[in-house]
Image (cartoon, rainbow, N blue to C red; front, side, top):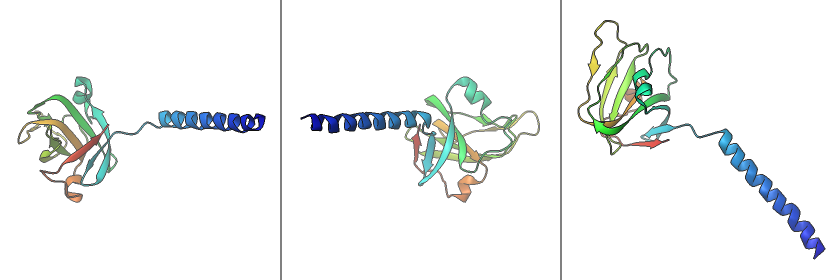
Length: 150
């Protein structure tokens, strides 16, 4: 009986230690939010407050190829965007509440006041901004379904 206890106690301690390490490691490396379109995933920053949506990608000098910003709205609506103080050209992708792409437009940095606005062809719940040309390069098109992993 003492032999069994001597074997079980270290085993239980080891199991507790391993479980603790797994939980600790997961908390150290939280999963980066991503959006996937046609099996291609992009790391995204989420803009879901008025302040974050207003700032967007302004003043950024570059954006990694497979990265972007997802603007999240509480209600579906007609969300128009502009490129004021945005230094890099972007693809703007409007996504409806069913996570279906309803419009894609290429937007260039604004060089004169007033800045033009980019208006979608319908209502959306999300707008994804990626580097300009990414949609064409990877075959992203209107009607594609996206998967958002936050």
